[in-house]
Length: 177
Image (cartoon, rainbow, N blue to C red):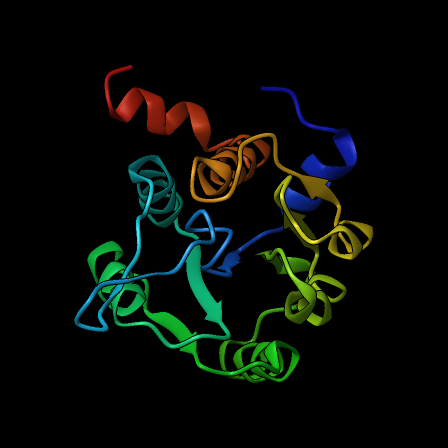
């Protein structure tokens, strides 16, 4: 897959990928069963992309304005230690995280798809959204994925970062591909 040179240049500096959940890691639907339990569907290829980034030495985190037990379980399953849920002010959360972890804006990529994501998208070095994002969000990103949220968009960005940083080939060889 080909990526614009400006996007590749931004991806070369990334040390942390932050993800929104609904519409990015999922297709954006919230399913609640008759017992009031929330059900989410996650795409396995996105999960492998996250694991590949981690294997290459990058960190991955979640910033979600909703609190969801399925997100807690999925983050634990993928070894994602940075998980912030239940706060609409994602800009404040981002500042808190940056201060705690010591990342420069240029070292952070963020994927979001709605208004609450714009404060973070405007700050990070690589701002990404999905084709179904709320239209004003697209004005604040460097890249719109080809794949939809919850169906490979996260994997696309993981591959983009790995390719830009020259880590893609080594991972392929490690897996015998």
